[in-house]
Length: 186
Image 1 (cartoon, rainbow, N blue to C red):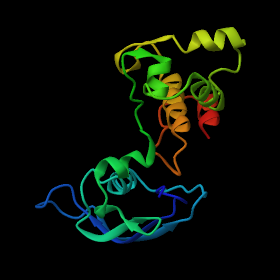
Image 2 (image 1 turned 90 degrees about the horizontal axis):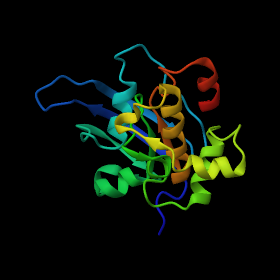
Image 3 (image 1 turned 120 degrees about the horizontal axis):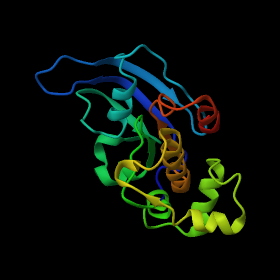
């Protein structure tokens, strides 16, 4: 069966620490995110927003409580299955040496799917169809050094869009971009 089928996320009394001898950084967090909803987690720096996302994809296992996606406790899932079910747009864009096609499609999607995601991310708005095809072969340097931070974030957004996951986590993806790019990401 296809999992997740809906994308409901529930956290029940979640506790989290970075090391077994470290203090708790999340204490008794309980919340529900309904399928298809758009939710924001707001808090001061260091409040645990990014940690909550790290707990969702088990960068470390929770030390108390549980996290469920569509009623299945994520601790019972293989990491590859869990992490493959969640699209992630990081706070700092992660790009790889290669082409736009490689970075957005991760070597597995069709050009049609990649172009649709790039279009949704507003990276193709001023290009003709021929230029759009050529854009797929545009080089990306290691860590995206030849792209602005805004363009790099939009490429990461397109990567998340091409995956078509039920759950998409965005970790302050607009923190280092200009107003227009922020509006495009929103």
